[in-house]
Amino acid sequence: MGTNENPLSRIQAAQARLNKPVVCPRCGSLWFQEVTFHKYSPTAYASAELEPKENMPQTIRVCLCGWPCKPSSQVRAGRTPNDDIKSFLESVELAAKRAYEGPQATELQKQIAKLKEELR
Image (cartoon, rainbow, N blue to C red):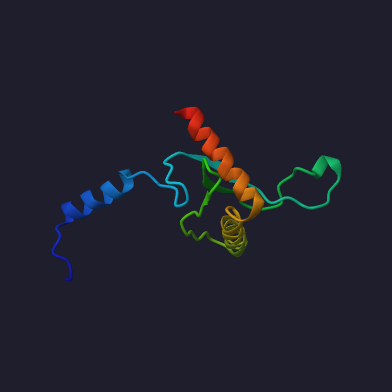
């Protein structure tokens, strides 16, 4: 029995963690938008162009600065949903790596600074 904490203190500690707001690792913001993402076919007839091609849409938080917050790990029953989750997590990693690189990042940082000034 490795812990000296009683069950009540463990429950209170867990509740405190749940009540703590998420903080963006890039800008420190506490405000996020919930965004649902889908996979689409690169070619399709006009009527099917916007028809999602995945089995399970993926929802994540996106910060005001555009930073995609990696969702917590999850496993679903069946191979197809897990393949979708794995593919989505790989895409989130790619987006997170590119989010603050190159000229787009500089422009985004300028827009964020302008927004901060306007809100003061």
